Length: 319
Image (cartoon, rainbow, N blue to C red; front, side, top):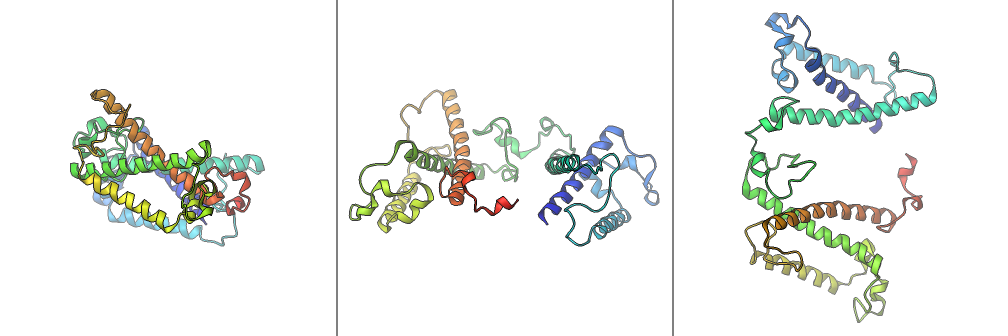
């Protein structure tokens, strides 16, 4: 069922993407879209702006055609996903290898088109054209944050959900503070996964009153959660509370600035400081992705370094 949905969305997106591109290259049809309303094809703008120009009769025809396509394709699901019996000229073949390659190409092109059409919609909604030049869109509230730390190549200012579209500086600083905190925690967590595997574990006991709680007996990763005693969790939570409380009283002006100057990293040179703070943000972002990957791998295989080849029980192998 999901493959059927993917193929359908891919085909619709390929048509929609070509619908955006073709009028820009070849021009528009002669004649009228609606003779009754004296509406010519050349008067219909390309892209999202066309939605408000199409008359109600046109929408009725569009919806009727969509319903016809759905009805024609509504049949028993014991068929091959996406195979509705249509044999397109120059593409259909009986050769199994060539057919498999072309169906794989359709899937790949459909996935690309789904990304492309969403990008065109976003660009069109932001600039008024699917080919709008960002440099000409001077009214964007996002420009208030274009020179902030963390605006890095290749994506520049990345805000796909438009959370900063209102230009609210205080909200931006709050989100940046959250990002920095999560990044720092993730960097520590990632190193916490890696270090015991490389250097080994500390001598001694996690809980001196429990001989079985030697550090060397504590598994690495998620397996350690069940080994930590109640007293250990109390200490962890107390330390977290201490960090949160102390951070409230030692804040600087910049997000994430608590007045601590780490040796070998703190500097008074503005250019070097900016470069290092940008590096912290970039490394924190990478660490957030890394630790989630480690959690997933650990939960799936029992180890953050689990070999997928050894995980023979995965239901994904059926695919």
